[in-house]
Amino acid sequence: MPAAPRDLPVWTLAAASLRAGTPVALLAVLRSEGSSPGRQGFKMAVTADTVAGSIGGGIMEHKFVELARQRLQTCDATPLLRPQIHRREAPADRSGMMCSGEQDVLLWPLTAGDLAAVAAIENSLQTLSGGFLELSPAGGLRFGPTTVVSEAAAARDAASADFYSYQPGAAWHYRERLGFRDQLTIVGGGHVSLALSNVAAALDFELTVLDDRPDLPTLESNQAAHHRRVIDYEKVAAEMPASPHQYVVVMTVGYRTDAVVLRHLLGRSFRYLGVMGSVAKIAELRRGLREEGFSEAEIARLRGPIGLPIQSQTPEEIAISIAAELIQVRRA
Image (cartoon, rainbow, N blue to C red; front, top):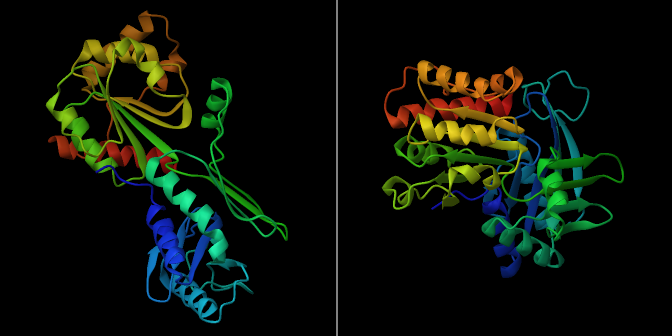
């Protein structure tokens, strides 16, 4: 089965607990800076005897889980927002860790009144239907569905880098999109595509695989992809929005189809655009694109040969080298 968004187990436990009348609290990292083990958006659901998710691990997470359980036991529904500084010399708000970063952690005891929003968030993550989570002292915990907008407005929203937004202060406000932040589109459904899909499934990508060959066994057997489609490569651009969260890997059946795909994608704004092949093949692709009028700047943004140089040979090894490069670009 395709991988679910990272937060789904958190909201599933929260929804099940509220339906059963079991006290449950939400822990969420609203801000993170530097070498913080809990990144912005990390979450946990905590009951008296069960947890799901993580806010970074270690002694800091342990202390917050225990604090949440104390609050649940005393029926204290007051939200608590607390900075955590991961430095021994910090004069206050020391987390007990020494990785040098900082994070703001929210403890939000959930109540029966939160069930509708929690269930809507769970459903959104299960169906990848989009929407927003909002948290604030004034507005509480809310689910905002994706509204029907024009294509232009939808494209602008998809291109926005603000997956998370946080306004600190007494009237703090936190908002995040639901679902996968990053999308990986693999153009080509062969053996390396199947291996890369299986590796990328653990890396929090919404995964799409495209090919122009009907009844391709490796495409049909790809159970890791969220979306699998047989398309005309001349229309490949319509299959993916230009976005700072879109990663595109081209690995079609051969040089000719790679060139067709690249003609339609080169010059568009993606976080990553790479093509699989040897040094000689990539050089020939670049030469052809140059002859067709693409600028040196556009051609320079094309990555290839792709994958970190780890002497990979099998489809599975090549997939790991490509996935490592995707992580490198994501974290740059």
